[in-house]
Length: 254
Image 1 (tube, rainbow, N blue to C red):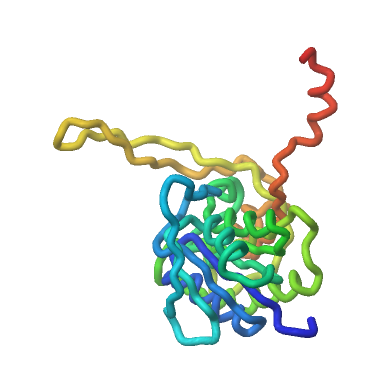
Image 2 (cartoon, rainbow, N blue to C red; image 1 turned 90 degrees about the vertical axis):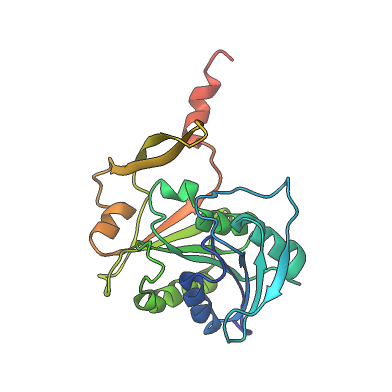
């Protein structure tokens, strides 16, 4: 590119999370960075947007560096909307979201605030990538990811992405990786249980628990790649139409 690209950085773990601070440092090597991220954790928010509360967005400075930073009271999707509509004077060349503390592979992409921010950018016609590390620790080691994040981001800037497609990138918890694998999303889901309790006032409440079950034995999936120490890259589309079923549905007596 003839000039430095404008890169929007966001996440769902909050603007001070180590994952986003690492992502900012990598993006500063590539382009001009503007950060708009939640002022606190927003994990599991999916594509929620704020409609019944006021939204705040204030410029801050968390770390040294050339980036401009804003913290928002909204969700990850709100952050992207605010960036496009209020903060930036032009559409960014790239949006990167993360690095998430924890997996966003397989069905987790549906619940993920990290990926929803990337999807919202895709809706706006911005090439976008969500990055996640399979380590929920606040002190997770993000250093081994940096060269791969830079490589993937530069490839997106050079080659762009099709309309309606964003990338979901997950890293196994490792010091070294076997490489990068382009995958499909594994067929897996959470088998939920609710821990039912009663508070001192006699009111019933619940804690959501459960376990992740992978029903997909294919070796072309993100779950297989991650289990075998590969970085998984899944192209995700936000058109949820089941195109293969349209013809059959038209044959129903509707």
